Image 1 (tube, rainbow, N blue to C red):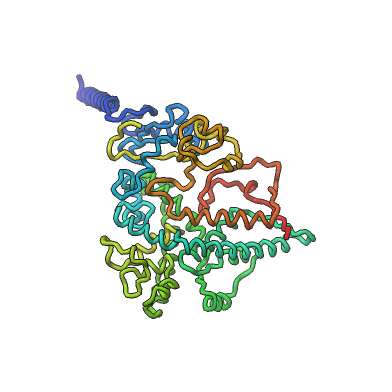
Image 2: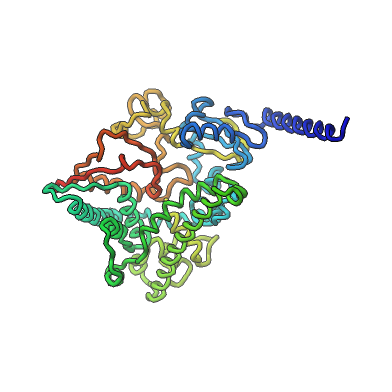
Length: 495
């Protein structure tokens, strides 16, 4: 027998041995859940890639297809992209109760994801609230959202901000309508998604740092091909407490935030570095993030200078005037401290540096026994489209949300669906558990205010009523797969 044949035989035997041991461990694993059978080394990546190509890279559609085959509680093995341990996908609201019921820092489900190298590279693993792995620090940061974003007085002030910003939006549409046509009846063709981005940007800046950024005005000027004179901006900055940033570029960078997270969460470092298409995209997105961070740091530094020129607040009334989201973070544990006493924390007794503040500001602006360390994916789209929870979930029926509030006695009964009562945890528009969105009350305020103000004044119609409406769930600051023909509408003033 030749030496080369000996080496070939040894290699084949090693491969057979490795594959045998891999499936032996797989069949004898501690937690046995349904799911596609993984391949050695690559896990379920081949199946995922096949389905992604088949369904136009719609990951939610792929997960729904897998759920139909393997049930609404199954496991995936994605060793390179997510975790070396199986990932459990949950598409049934009944299985989320134990996870969402854990609200304390000592619970088993306080971390959003397992630690990832990509998050470390972006600097998100130990800062802010979105992916912070340091639980005491995460709890400390959440207090600023509680007192600076969703406190009762802040939400009440937010309603006024929504109304004022909508009035500005209204004036912009009237001006655009007058430029688009000379008809007696005022009609304007607008893209609501684009305008809502500017409207929400204006509101969140006024809520978090109590400053206008003229996002609506700048967008109006860009559509009408005009320029704002710098001297006017400087005068407005002094009189109306505004900040001068390029909001159009800022919004673009914020829209890049979630694609950046997705890329760095789901791709190994070697792919981002050595695979040319991904490497170029990673560099572009990191550059966008750097520009976003530069804008945020500029805002923080300008506020620091402003605070240093202000006399130290002594009374509670003086502190309340300065108590906004940004100022609380800058002044905590300093002589100018305006935070409430219940914000003091034994883990953080030093002032916050600009980098930690920037991360929080960025976060303000988007069954069976399971082995420890297993990562869960609460598939919200799967739960929302589950016929066990909703009648005809594939049909757009707004009236379904006019049903009676949730009744605990009907939570698991078939009558709950037929009566139109939502099953608990079957509508996860803000997530759940200890990582539920801390700004949900603010978002609900904005949504209710816009719908009320918009439809009380305007009649709305699609630009092309015969065109097929393409819909998808979106982040308000991340326009994903929203088609122009469905996002554009005519608005007809009835005032």
